[in-house]
Figure (cartoon, rainbow, N blue to C red):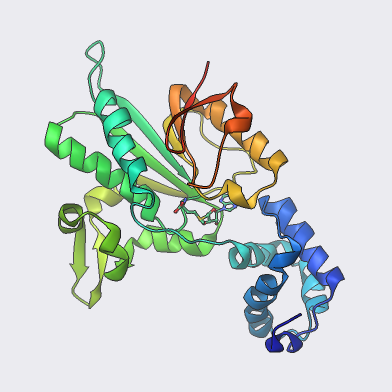
Length: 283
Ligand SMILES: C[S@@+](CC[C@H](N)C(=O)[O-])C[C@H]1O[C@@H](n2cnc3c(N)ncnc32)[C@H](O)[C@@H]1O
């Protein structure tokens, strides 16, 4: 270990490999050797809380009778939750122009039924950005639709923050000013933070879901945002997930991925239609 704090808790290669194996099996997240220092620093806080003396003791806890509960804390500590409102703003223009505007038109006199999924939603900035775009368009066009946003993540801590919907003023800087004024309330008890308004929160259902497990929903989605999540997975996990997203989308449905991601290995399933926006091919 390179950092001086590394001496606080003995951390052997065998300990690291045990953690790598559990994290991969439970979350699909791949921890390469260069993540070893990060693993040490994120988990040493946990060892301190538990009063443990070494990573060997921590690994014994993970593999022991109480292990399942501790694995939840382990995964929460390891996930990277970086996000922001309107991250990759062009995706939200695309959502508005190419997906929601056409979808808002009634067909055969039926009320449009629109389902959107933020898969790996972190602390909520992504699903609330989606909901704000929809609500702003709905106000402008008086669209009469049944629209819901599902927001899921594996990490318990970020989901608590998403449910609270409270954000610092600084984190609202990437929200377009009119939306900031329309869809947030300043909190009287803490003027440095704001809360997402109830009408936006009501559009979003927040659930804990590990993408690797069975998905408990039957309906299909018009669009799935899975941005900056699959970058932590290996090719095998990513391929399996892309197949499942394909099956979970309506015909002609859309998949949004992060700026550094590509589905070009899956050209029989998805067609590139915009900057990191893909459209489902076939049924
Ligand atoms: C970097 S954040 C991306 C947040 C947001 N999509 C964005 O692009 O701003 C990645 C999120 O994926 C979640 N994640 C990682 N592995 C997961 C899994 N197996 N199932 C569900 N969520 C997972 C993490 O907890 C984390 O919140």
